[in-house]
Length: 262
Length: 253
Ligand code: HEM
Ligand code: SF4
Ligand code: FES
Picture 1 (cartoon, chains in turn cyan, blue):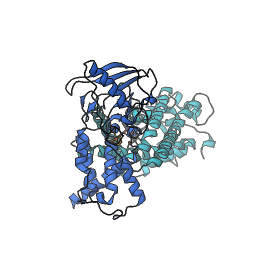
Picture 2 (cartoon, helix red, strand yellow):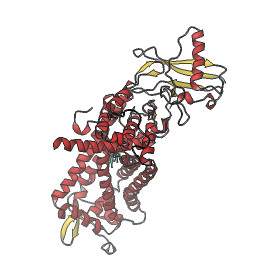
Picture 3 (cartoon, rainbow over the protein chains, first blue to last red):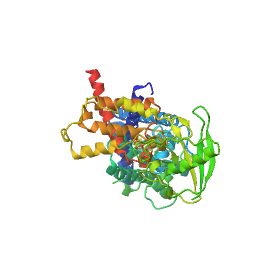
Picture 4 (cartoon, rainbow over the protein chains, first blue to last red):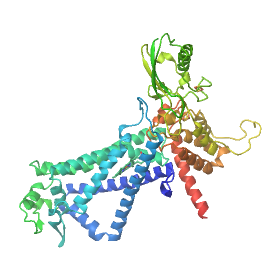
């Protein structure tokens, strides 16, 4: 038994796992829906970003950030304890154990989770701290006379890098993998599952995972297509023009076509 | 039929064990798995070698003693069947059969295929009982119990404490066994009065004995000869959450 109250018993650790998982699942779904606004006019997502950063009281933003951070930390601490204790509880394996039920996703939660963690860190440096590409901060946008950041252009420019996009797509595939077990498993851990709902929730979890994958991965995919000469699903050619010969300091204003305004 | 057996031999708890190979001719398809081992043991004794130690008692699938891993399956490949109820007709002439003891930290090997399952007794002592004096048998139906409740409790009460769930679980977790005890007694009016104390003690006893945590693989349900369902684990999780909240507030108040 761990001395820390929250992680004292086996079941308490599972509750922590499931509740923090649920918080993260809720966030991931909301985040995905917010992102899909890139398929509207650039103004839509830029206004949304402006709202989150400047209109929403900063206290609210920080409460959400802290809750998410605490959830991620507790989720990981609990996962690490579970893995260590489970190894101890079954020190030897069998000659050739035949697993019947345990899905591959269930058995690889720790690995899919670890790569998702690496992704979360990179993603925060990439788009939140914006320390990877200096051009991001200089992409400006005018919202009814107020100077704001051009989040739209930042996203498309960020995904013009094939390696970065590939990592995003891979990480989302692994998140889908993680959730295809996790979203059903959390109901069992909290005691809300039975034989009938087990099959239904397993199917729901897979569908949810695939939805999350599709909703996130479509943005790097379409950005790459538009950037490398494909049809203009997003305004990649305009962004490319505006950023191609950047001097490294002056603010960049992308000139979107008139049709993009509304 | 002819068989090649690969059996785990271990002198005692303090010595490391290893696999030994044995060839067995002329096994009847109608013999049970344990009878097949009896035949092997007679031959070993005749040759002056020590027989393979394995646990067994009822040989009719109700006592839960016949613990062994057969070809990577707890109690062998047949669903809902204990090793003693498994018949040799499920194997083919010329098969190699691997037989191992249960593997879990909380179930140390004593000798060959025999493991020490005292840890289960610890869980039963922690909460697998009711304290109400039941006296002599009362009239039937004196305490009316709804059909769904009775069915659920009866299904959970089918657990024979064999330990296959722990053996099959890659985490060595005893959640199915413990969940079965909690569901059986917490569902019935005779056991309800102590449901919080029961679930808390059972979970603590389970953790203290060194069983692992559940990761919702579901291997236990597949291995269980009595077809106990994961539902009992969900019920234990739910009861534990409620019991923890209630005990927290009763301490605070
Ligand atoms: C966006 C991020 C994440 C989400 C939405 C998420 C979600 C979930 C959910 C819902 C569960 C099921 C809880 C349960 O079994 O009751 C789970 C389990 C798990 N997660 Fe995550 N997770 C995330 C990140 C991570 C990370 C970064 C790790 C890092 C190592 C991780 C490791 C695990 C492990 C090992 C389990 C299995 C626990 C078990 O089987 O008992 N997860 N996750
Ligand atoms: S739950 Fe099933 S497998 Fe586990 S001890 Fe009881 S009867 Fe055996
Ligand atoms: S010997 Fe009793 S259940 Fe197999």
